Length: 213
Image 1: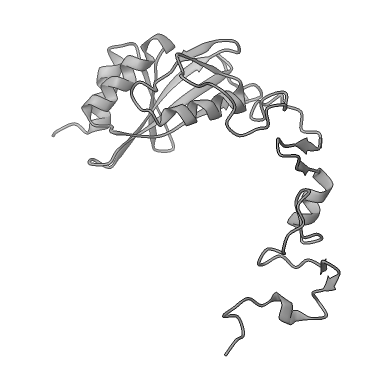
Image 2 (image 1 turned 60 degrees about the vertical axis):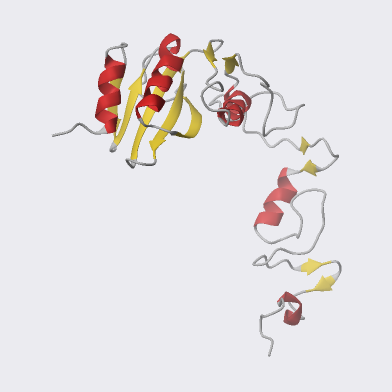
């Protein structure tokens, strides 16, 4: 019987010192950071033509975890074979990884997200900077030791995200989630909007095509 693409790649990576594993039907191979680029190159050459994602995991408080604190996973997919494989690299805080932007240019944004959320750096990345959080936000939100206290967030254009206002907007007590007070979103039952009592005039909830002739 012909081996699947995943099996072929796993056998190749085992020869490079890779350690295969399975978790809930998902197959992965953990390689050293020195072998990362070679491992991803081999997988791509053999048929994993699509990089679906690059994401990080922080095992700081994971029960029973032994080994390095962080893991970075490369989610590879074969469109033609409908097979998926995760190539993983384990690193400690302060360690860097080589970029794979030379193989997939789209990985630039994925690596930037890992850098922003976890503080892990990628050597050789052409434009390693934050992707999601404001420039003046200290820390990396996906780290397990990132403080969860409610702190107002200031954005570059002057808007702010106040925790209390955010909660009020999410549960329908206010129409805005930050400094912006625009129209009520569909499905949000704000008590008032611009001084108008929406409950006393339900027609204001309707949009074109709702309840019309």
